[in-house]
Length: 301
Ligand code: NAD
Image (cartoon, protein in one colour):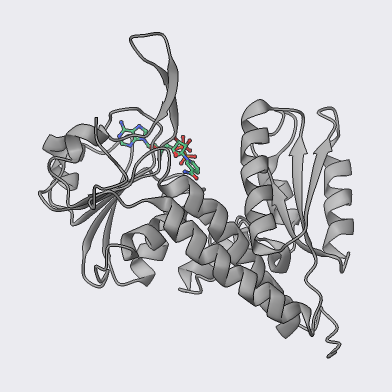
């Protein structure tokens, strides 16, 4: 059994999370002296246990950063129109710093149209099409949190991303595509692979950095990784082991790949905690942008 506490090839999320949250806390404490920092609103539609876990982690992150966190649970039967009307009110509420739309939502709710309804200056998850569009122009300050967390963890190795060969496996709107744009903004040479890619290993084996966001346990084995490469495992999969115990694993066969890779993120404990911290950093960025846009009254005390 590996000892993650002492294995320097493991890029642990906790210290990165702590550093980012401390930076945000400092920002919030200083900002509060002149310009009020509103609350974050988390919207869950219907009661889903997996969502409750995310919300709890985000609430803890907000607490650590000194940001108020308002957990709202909307009835699963709510209509799309009512959701949009409520979001519109929140866009106009000066005490609301940012809006988090938890996923999944019930089938009758169109998540993309709700994400589009959140004003880009309150879009702390970076999921509004306008926020995604900014990334294409290398304006990456309000990027989707998981994608930004994977870049943060690569930087943690000390490697300069400029000119590095990065293979992004997975091309979802939430993770893979924005991560590819963030990596390009850092100067990496990016190849994006997906379920239609022929010979995934041919691509992954020549990469200096492999980022995986697929949702398939053990998809990536040691034969697919170049010796010394960085492996960022975004996948979250619940599996039942031989003893009948359920546990969470990523998309990478971590123990086996550890024998080949230079650095690897564990699951759990790698990308997940950093994602929460990036959400809080995005909240601080939203505050700066709202100030610059004249949305927040400044009252020097
Ligand atoms: P998704 O289902 O939207 O996308 C999966 C992607 O994997 C697609 O691009 C698909 O083409 C690709 N794919 C499927 N099979 C493949 C194969 N055999 N080879 C190569 N590519 C293949 O998933 P998502 O929302 O992007 O999430 C991916 C994983 O990341 C999930 O396990 C999810 O739980 C996890 N996730 C983690 C965090 C976090 O904070 N750590 C956040 C979001 C998602």
